[in-house]
Length: 178
Image 1: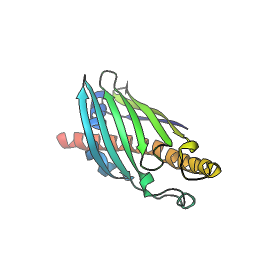
Image 2: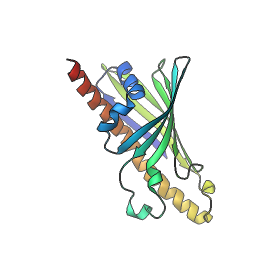
Image 3: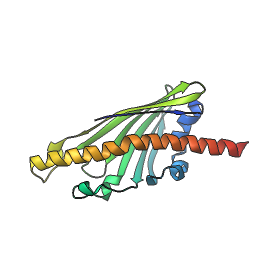
Image 4: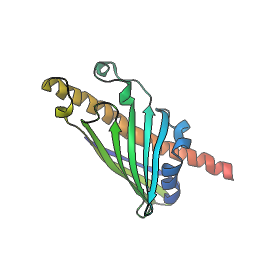
């Protein structure tokens, strides 16, 4: 499943990039589907910043999926590499359920656009039914489909919600400075 999201944020590229990278915990109040974010690691080398954060999402698991999914599907580990040279972020999401079976990787591009920033996020979500252990193959295929639909339905809206949260945060903090 392809992941594509695009949004315009009316603030300069370097400010938007730095806000995403460095102010993540300050953005939580602007993210209604996020219960919390736990920073795990931050390393800097050769101008790049690598972050590891554990996200705890909110929201309901749809009734048909409850038999297959648990609350652990609402938490994930995100590994990112921030490159300030070209204003990009490579990301990888590791689910806390079906970890071996789920692959979710992508890249964010922070592009200058008429004095603002166009954020383009592209990624891919894939679930390998052969890595869902302990269930018959036909059931693993069904689980893979349900999990992919559930996660795919969460990722793109969450990317857009995060961008809207960054916009709101920057608008509020810029007004506080004037």
